[in-house]
Length: 283
Image (tube, rainbow, N blue to C red; front, side, top):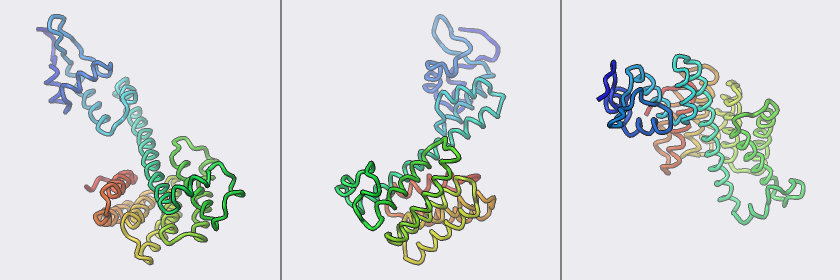
């Protein structure tokens, strides 16, 4: 038995920190949270009382899937909250980019279902727009729409890429106005709103979110398009600093999400709502 002041067994630390003993052993193996003492005779691990706070920090960060290497940075200087805040802010950007990739994939799948896979295979993305088959501008609208998603997915966009993303979103919406159906127009307005929200511009984000909702209401469009119109208004008002309106529209989005037919689509809306800035979780 190892003697020492305020030493804790694996089980004791696990209970105090809200972790499992298995997790603590894993964090020891990968060098993230080493025990203070290891009994040479039995191999039992013992932790110092001061390591409880570290273990709790690990639990909190891993509960939101912060990568182990980023957790390691926080543990290296646990008293510097600025380090943890910076790590969390960077992780939030990565998660938002991942969410934008998922939404982009869903929209691209919608276009494939509408246009047909065979047609998409013949309209190569590498083919210059000037020589692409004449389809009344639909191909250009799709390419611009998808191009905006690719830029939204980038975590380190330049100022020039921000400008390009914004102009492409408006160009896509313009071409959908020429060749698309109401559902395309609503999604185009939603995308413009998301771009403005990402760029921190609340007023135009609110305007385009409101247009997306108006199109849904005018044409009886429901399901996830309606829920995401409410989500866009919640996000835009949060960016504009109006917490009361952001919460009100979040509640409308949650109510609309209950009517979404597909479970995966509903989960996507709920996940997206969790990324609305400064909003508590409502579910």
